[in-house]
Length: 337
Image 1 (spheres, one colour):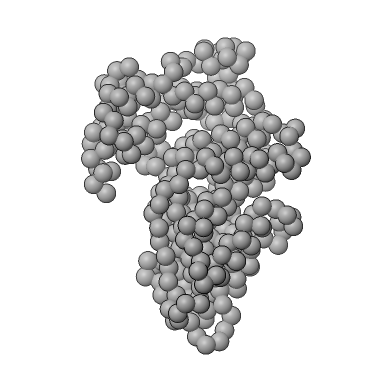
Image 2 (cartoon, rainbow, N blue to C red):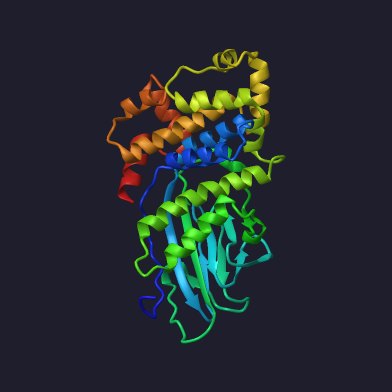
C-alpha cells in the first residue's frame, strides 16, 4: 500500500467495445458452442451498439473499519466487484440489502441511487468525497467500480431489457468462467504497488461485456436478447439496419431480404423488440447522429445523409422529436459541457 489514505481515482477515457465482443465471441466459440451461432451473432450485435457507450473506471478503493459510499443516480450503467473483504449493497428503489463476498459483482443498469457500506447503520458519503484513514489493524475491504455512460436521449431498444440491478455470486460461477478469471486478474493488478490505471480500465471493460453476456444466458426466457438470438430473421434485419443506417430501408425491403412477408416480419420484430422496424430504425439513426454531432465537426447536412435522411429538414425534425433540441442546439449544449 502506498500510503494510509485511501484514494478514489476517476477517469473519463472513452473506449470502443468492439474488441470486447471479438474477445467474447472467440472465447465462446473455442468453448465448443459453435452450434449456437445465432447467440454468437447476438453477442456480436451487442458489440456494435455498445460502441455508443462511454466507459471508464469509476472508482477503486482499499479501506477498512466502518465506511459507506453513496453512488448517485445518473444516465449510466455500472458495476461493483468486491475483490477482498465484505460489504453491503443497498439500492434506493428496493428494501433489499445484498451482502457481497469476494468475487461477487452487482450490476446497476440505469444508474439507480445505491450505497456500498460496511454495515447497515454507517453514515455514507458521496463517492467524490470518500476518504478513509486505514487503521493499523482490521479486515481490509477492496472494491473496484466500472461506469458506462449511455448517450443522451432514449435508451437503445435492446438495453431496455436489463433489470434495475442484478447480483452475480462469484462462488456460484464455474471454476473456469471468464468472469471469475477476470476478477482474479483485477485483484492481482489492484494489489500491485505499480498498479496501472490503463490495465485496470481494459480489464474492467472486458468484464462489463462478460457480465452482460452472463445475464443474457441466465435470462433466456425474458430478455430481448434471448428472443433475438432465437429469431434469426429479426436478428438479420437488425444487423442490416445497424450496419447500413443510410440505406433506404422499408419494412418490405427488410422482409424480402429475409424471405418473409412484410406483415410477418413486422409482427415478429415487434414481438422481439416491442416496437416496429421503422421506429427502431429511427431511434438508432438518431443515436448515431447524436454521436456524430458530439464527436465530429460534420455539418448537419452531412450527418443527415450519413444516417439516411436526404432532407436535413426531415432529419432535424426527427432529431428534435427524440432529443428535444434541434441538431445545432444539441451540439452547442453538449460541446459546452
